[in-house]
Every structure is written in C-alpha cells, then in structure tokens.
Length: 153
Image (tube, rainbow, N blue to C red; front, side, top):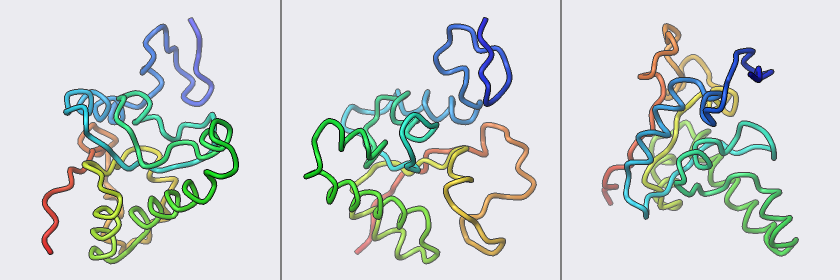
C-alpha cells in the first residue's frame, strides 16, 4: 500500500483518498450537479494540488493549470489564461463584497469552491470578511462549494 508523502497516510486504490474529508465532500456534492455546472477554485502550478476539485468532480473550472493550456494550445492562449487567472484572484482576494459579486458575475460560475487550498491561496487578514474561523476543527462543514445565487442588478 502506498503512503502519500504530503499527508503521510496510506491511500490504497481510492483515487480520492489523498483529499481531506471536506474536499471529498465537495467533490461528492458537485458530482450530483447538472452537466452545465461550472466553478471557480484556486489556481496554481502544474502537478500540484490545485485544480483538484474540478479534476475530481468533472465540473469545469475557470482555470486549472494555466501551463497545460499553453502546452496544448500554444502561446496564443497566454492572454486568455492570464485574464482568467486575474479573474480568479479577484474572486478570492477582493475584500469588498461588491467586487467579489462583480467578478463572480463576470466569470459566470455556479460555485466558488472554498476548500483546503484556499487557505494557502489567500492571505487572509484577521478582519477580512472571508477569513476562516480560528476555531475551525477541520470537519466537513468547514469546506463548502458556495453556490452563487441570483445576482441583483
């Protein structure tokens, strides 16, 4: 039985065993959603834990590993992947709810994933409106795909 070096526990043949329980819960939930569902999740380098929710659930994300788009589509895709990366950063890093709403509307996604990697992606300040609760015990309810509701004009 293999031992995953990042989490140091046996993973067996379950392809999702390396995910923490909250991220697995997000994947299970997203797998029940309609085929046209889309999401935003934190982006990062290739062959890292980024884009794991989209990959595991089959729900397309705004952007996964930007360099893979470059490999398969060539340099002409760089402007698009850069724009998408900046859009994802605005969704997760904006401190004003109106700016987050505008970025989510622009992205046209159904869900914004708030999972384990988000804590590394966003440098939260203590007073930031989206800061994780310091008493978070790591249970499944600490991770959630936040559904985008109707955006009022």
